[in-house]
Image (cartoon, rainbow, N blue to C red; front, side, top):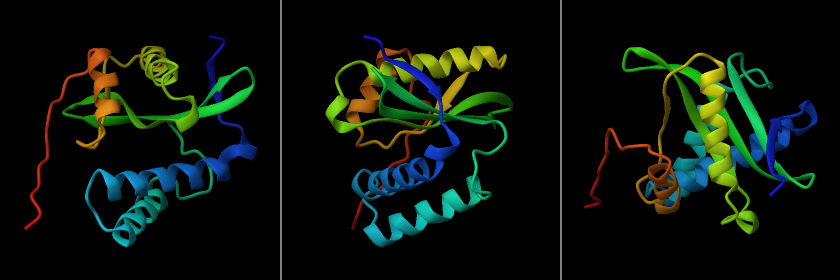
Length: 155
């Protein structure tokens, strides 16, 4: 595999925001059980807060997963405080559906761990929806453990 990660280019920013926001809204709807309009509104509000200036925020890193010159996925990370320590937080790891099962998500997460080390951080953290079994399996296989589980029941 010749896959690697590279920084997002300026000319890719708008496409990344649109794709990332749409994927986030879809996950909120599908895995979170939230109605589409509410999920889309939450995604809009969250992105407006986190990415307010039309550029990758200071301290954040957005990377493209590329194989043989083709962009096949994304990784978005940022330093954040969690439980009294500074961690590298994974906001997004996404691989295009047609490219899944090739180890690209694993490559992205290993890159995130290397990025944390480069930044002098000792921990990587992330949130994952309970229904995203594939992602949860990947994270577990890399040694991540669940530290909290939020549950709900529709009545």
